[in-house]
Image (cartoon, rainbow, N blue to C red):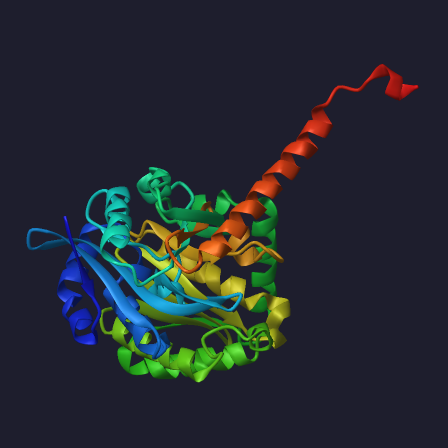
Length: 383
């Protein structure tokens, strides 16, 4: 297996055909598609970032693609370079595309980085499956010359679309069903009712994005500084992406509308038999109706019975209040982990030594605490 590095914009663009062919042969997600990676790089890379896409060949055929880039970082005034996924910007669970054994492909990549390339100090693999590539574990990371650290990255929630809508609904907790029906009755009782509008026409996507952004500006996301409309760069990114994907029938924007007013919006992307709910927002003034959840459920209903296997609600970092539109309605969840690998033979060696001492000290303290709990009590201590 031969590995070649793609470092220029023109070479990146020339990969489109082979990239799409490989994507069709694998189960890789929408966030590893050429359109998504290319648009992400176009809008989010800095002048100091370096394109570093690894292509794996067997003969003349590409059997793997690692959509990486190299960025400059600093820790305790020590400058270093990190290899990371391009779609760590605005993406979700980035992947290495592989037609075959993903663990073997990752192993080849790590070996290549060790032996043939030294312009890096850190490899950052965010939101990877806890069970490892293809469920084969992460033993390939254990190798001389590396120091690896891991931490929980979040939970991916999803809805299985394999059954029908009625069975799915009946399988939900009774409280969830009751609350949904109550909110529906309340919304329907308003004069004029409501409608659900789906925008899929490429010519209407810019207008759909403007409407969605207007909803976000009336939501909690504005104060939190997140979302499609958080800044001009993000807005331009989604405009390009939506127009590109809509031309291929792979993007829809849904609106919950009441008396001509947009109450909520849901941005949807499609990759093969998986539907991705990328952004959901609602105007705070309508919060009492839970319009975001009501629109989301309407989107669920539309995609049952249409040969889709799953509706992906994307990764949630569970470090705050649960997002009930995911946790209450999902039929399954996948845990993710973040692996950060440090090259020992680098300028970061002093920092790595400190990390290892800190880890060892923490383990010793934990062991001492466990020993105190399990240590037998002397009869004299009871007197």
